[in-house]
Length: 327
Image (cartoon, rainbow, N blue to C red):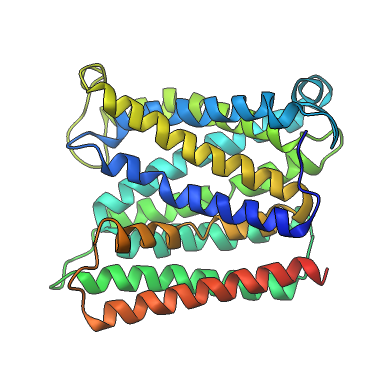
């Protein structure tokens, strides 16, 4: 299988994973009046399909460790379960994050959910796999969390008036962040315990867990949505073919980033790859600035927050990179 031979290659893969994780939502933006619960079915299929394709290509190349099918047959069953549980939990957290954004907006949802997930995920995975300088990694995570907070401040500066924040939305974001932060330690365990999984096998089982979760959690939300009226499968079947294609593309983009992140983790460790990957809101903000023009006519304060966010993110990358190099 293909694995990065140098730190530079692994770092590039983690940055690419950040770009993918921060870009997939553009495919949903291209749909009009389409419920996220319906879009999510194609998205979940897309992340699984791309992980399978990469497992049978890059994950089955000669050299660099066990091929996908060999690893699937020889790995410990508990490691497989851990990878699947990680995907199951991620799926719930991701759906709740989107719901939280719809209820309270990006300005509040991002800092709460992603901020909690970033800190929790790095700490829990570092306890399992203490790879890299704890001090530099901690400083890097702190800068990344500050960058996420500044994103929220920038989006908040776009809003006018004093809108009351629903407690329901805050609770949804808190639960999303706590669950989002738990998938990293499950992935870490599956890749480091006895008879471990390769990153490609982890990705297939992780995305399988996410798809399986849809048949429970997504169906439940369709009947009892956190936002809007209940929606049935008729809306899915009557949607234009382009919407299904966009859902599959969105899943493929996110799935590609996930495989890259896990593969990079095989060299640098999950705490470092996860810390960089979870800075994806910065990429989403870039799309918002340069493609969707969300900050056109924004106040000077909003622009200052954006500049501060990018500076903090660059510093976070430097510190997290150094955390590995001085280990």
